[in-house]
Image (cartoon, rainbow, N blue to C red):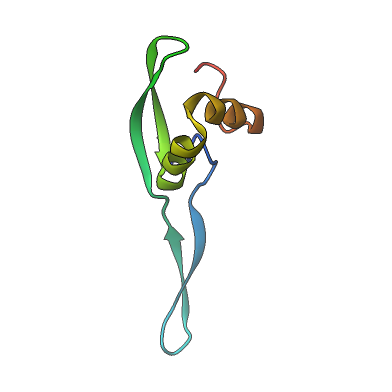
Length: 81
């Protein structure tokens, strides 16, 4: 499972740990991702999505059907859902 949100498209970012002496070493900023089941009443079925916390808030704000439609249009979601 790659750590990419299927709603927002967020993924792992890279940066630096910076010590007190300003010495820099590489690090990763991991995504706060969950595997969550959602009920889709239009198709009368459950779907599983890998979503971030921001993606959950987007679904709560706009609704599941509208959010899935925009995610497919942006290419974050594969077409087999």
